[in-house]
Image (cartoon, rainbow, N blue to C red; front, side, top):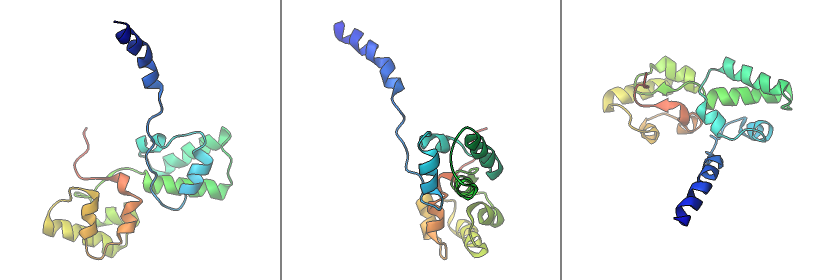
Length: 155
């Protein structure tokens, strides 16, 4: 019985452990995010948040007012990074070419190639399936991979 009591006493400590951090996508601004924001916030904060550029700007402005230090240019770069990599989710199987172009900063040709491939071959099942799209620079997908979904979001 002593073992069980000891385990129960240690159980609350388990819930205090920090969540395992996820690897941030590689894109312009990542280094600044890690330097300026990462000293106070773990990556779990951005992975849980999917929002627009305007709302990211409000969040970064609020953090700057609380003491986050960076130049206006550095903070703008962080906002761009967060908006690109942690903007709203996009269902790659339902989005129009224009939505893909705008949301993922693709060329018109690349976005149209995704839609055409999807029409010819069927829905994508995973991010790496986009590697098969002819004419798509997959490195552009790598930085937005956390925004890509394949099914309708639960309501």
